[in-house]
Image (cartoon, rainbow, N blue to C red; front, side, top):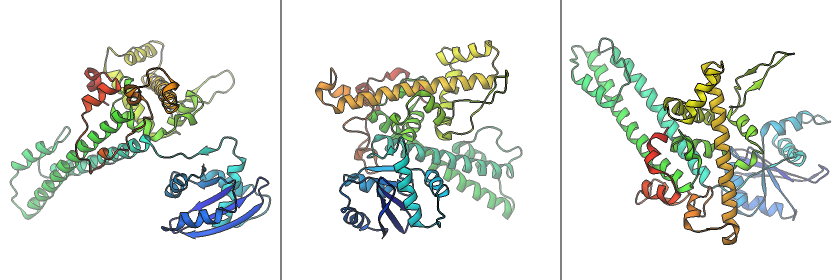
Length: 400
């Protein structure tokens, strides 16, 4: 086992055997030759596995380089390596070499090590969904600044949500009588320009996101209230659904599983504050969408919980857990379908181009160049939806 402690300027590798005995150590500078130097040094260990601390964060690039070179890579959480160092029988200093050794030992002792795989369509959706969130947050900040400036120019400001065209019309009727008022008008006009730019970027980002979701063939959009943004957030951040053995583990991951705080005969469950908040927020948006549509199954479930004596928040939490379970079932089915398709034409019946488009991990996932900024033409969403078997008439109300 070769433990790696990655840094921005250097990487430290430490090799141990099954008895956790030291076999060798190497420190390389970060750069174009880092992979070559590590592989040359590791050639002395024919049977080897790499364990990288935070392989999806600071060690992301190195982990993907090793996977591309045909190496087996494990992801070790920093807290696991810290526990190994803390519980060591002998005192050790905190340095890169000891950190790399702790990473290797933590990987050896792990009962269910997390193996890092090559990137697929889930990474594309994760990138574009994060871009969508960042743009939306930036637009909210600009809109708040514009609200503040307009309150200093117009009595009462703008009482409701503000848009670029509305703000431009209001500014057209403002007469600047002083230098201070003229400066505020000029500032407001620049903020309006920023708002227009962000609106255009959000629209383009959402289109790319829709194309990536359709190309992935995920069936999570079949859940009422789950549109491209919600689906891309859930699938992109979750990644490989097989790392969750049950729907309960997935619910704990996204924060929809309540925590029991009972004592004696008093049974109490409280809200879980842990879990991935981005996925939790996406599920929350799907739940709100279901509640707003009176004819949806989610609204009926919500009203049934209220009739049982639940509060509005408790009923909403129960609905979010139900949506989490529905998403888990569909992602597991997508993963099984992808494995069957990879097994070849004999893996399942009807293994044609339509079945490939409906899979969770198709042979041509959302990594194609048409989803980048340099794409030559946009993919037809309607055509792709028909290929994947999606029902186009209900696509609009499923969009969150």
